[in-house]
Image (tube, rainbow, N blue to C red; front, side):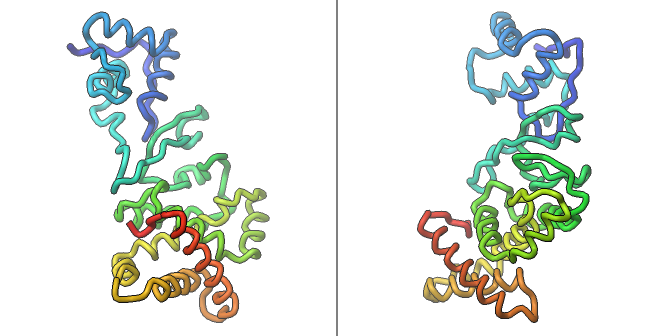
Length: 258
């Protein structure tokens, strides 16, 4: 049975999940998700199953919203790693709180120049974050990397260990905020691109090399991406901190190379 859309239309935001959309759509039509779904089950239109992503339920809400066939089809996991559900850009959502899964987007909305982490705000004074986001989308997404993967977690922790305090202070002053994850985002993306490079992974995973030697090499390579030529002393100190971070990741069982 094909359902007609509810009288008041509700625009679906890119990446928005069915739960968030169904609540908004029901509210805009003066009712609740429970009332709508109970009525559809009684009429035999919606399956009795309470599974949130039952195909019959997804199809019903697509029809109730007059949505395209690809709605609610964001992947739940990529490469065995769950795609996290998170707040979408408030500007994209016309100022309304919306939640969904968007594996093809990092922590920056390029269109609106906004940081879309736990708190959202304008980052027009930090163009390097927009550049980092473009690299995330152009390189990391094609490698199966999204913000919830171990590689991004490892990159974030290594960036935190290796970044110069002066860089944090300078960015914080420009932004007028000191959101730590935001301030280290360019370095996080840079490191993630390095450690997910196929040739780099092949070398690191070479069983013929002792684990300690491989860890030293990884720490040194990461530090080199943070401090270019002419900063050898700072690079060595950063490498030591990064190596300690890699050891902690190993003890925690985080397989960031997968």
